[in-house]
Image: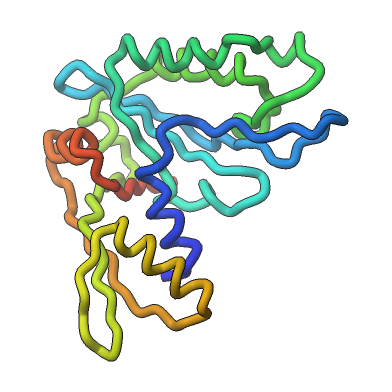
Length: 205
C-alpha cells in the first residue's frame, strides 16, 4: 500500500468538517476543495449519515472508490451544519469569486450549503444504499501490524501515525498490514462511528 494511501487513512478520523482553503490577495486560489459526490443516509435510529467523496485541486484525495468520508448527525444538527455554509456567503451568480467545486461546477459556500440541503431531501435508507446496485462496504480500521526484522508489532492508528512519519523522514523501508473488521450490519456501522473509530468506506462507481 502506498505511503499516500496510509496518510489518507489516518486523516479520515481527523476530518470533521470541510476545510476552507486560503485565497490569495489578488483573488487567485492557492487551493480549493472539490465535492465529487454526496450521499445522505437515513439511519434506523433517526439520525443521518453524511457520506462525502471530496478532495482538493492540488492533491489526489477523493479520486478513488474508498476515499469516502462519513459522519453521523441528528437531522437538526445536519441542517444547522448545512445552513452554516450560507453565513457570510452569497450564491455564485451574485459573487465575483468561488470557494470550491461541486462536481465540475464552481460554487460558493452558500451553494454548498444549498447542495447539502437538497441532498438531504434525496436521502435514502441504509438498506437502499446497500442494495442500490453498487458495491458498498464499511470496514472498521482496528490498527496496524508493523514488521521489523520479520517481527510483528501491533500498533493503534495513533501509534502508527507517529511511527510512519518518523520512518518517512528517515527514508526507511516500512512493512505493515492494516487490520480491518468488516461491518456487516447497520448497527455495527453506527457503533463504529459513535465510538469514533476510523472507518474505510467503499462505494463502487
